[in-house]
Image 1 (cartoon, helix red, strand yellow):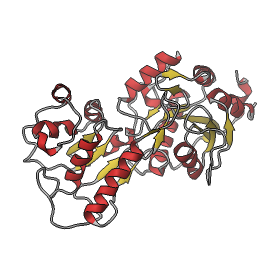
Image 2 (image 1 turned 180 degrees about the horizontal axis):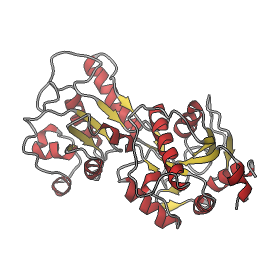
Image 3 (image 1 turned 30 degrees about the horizontal axis):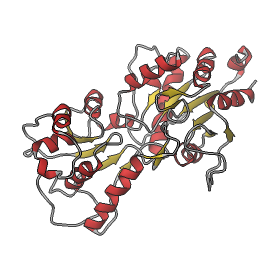
Image 4 (image 1 turned 45 degrees about the vertical axis):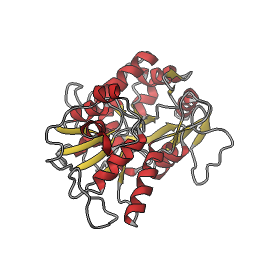
Length: 352
């Protein structure tokens, strides 16, 4: 346990941000030391958040799962998933095409989007739109909904929430939307441009991620590359899209706001019953109570380079994407450690 004098004498505090996949979990299996790491911080009222490029669930569902598996009380207000910043777009767009696993429909609706269309709704409307879809009829009718005004009301934006599972169909549907005439289904604009017909957002750009298999798997970054390449082939110009998630400054700014909010709640400056006030997308915190923030991650290309560019410290663990001997190029972690518990104890050791 950290001595009380540490908590009482530091005018600025230490805080942590943890990636989830490859740091706290490998698939759904906790990584040794993950539970002890979060318990150590909780016992000493050291603020931390979970900052992941994963998604597809609500922040509450993610927090509940982590709490039960690691035997530690994690609040939804501590969870920043790749698509959490989409909450800031609720008042900007009316009808959105929410792309991802079937669960993202409810996530988008819970965020406050009132007119949500999932890509499977379009497949249901006309199977010929996606001739290479891998969905069975049973899956399609389970995942999709009838949208009465699907072809008479325009789409305002495409929001990719997480890695979809039917890439051939999903790429076709996204391509149709961003090359349409003013966001109307069944139309094709006449002009070619790098600017899509409607804005498109990708919630992260991770090329690879770590799951229980011994080799890294393709992530949403690979899906984005395919969408961009096909758009460029059709238009002769690169796609002008928006990307969130680590390592973007947009996401680190958003996460910093969330971390500051959590510190206020943890220290009693803000009552836990008060609703979390979310920043506008792209808003940078004017002040911070933290002397140092340590990002603990397994992916040099997202966790570590993002923290480095943002001015946070970083701990690169060897339990996920990164393997000892990998070329770090311009990425310079503050420390390279074996696992998350090693990261926490070594970091805290500098302040004791």
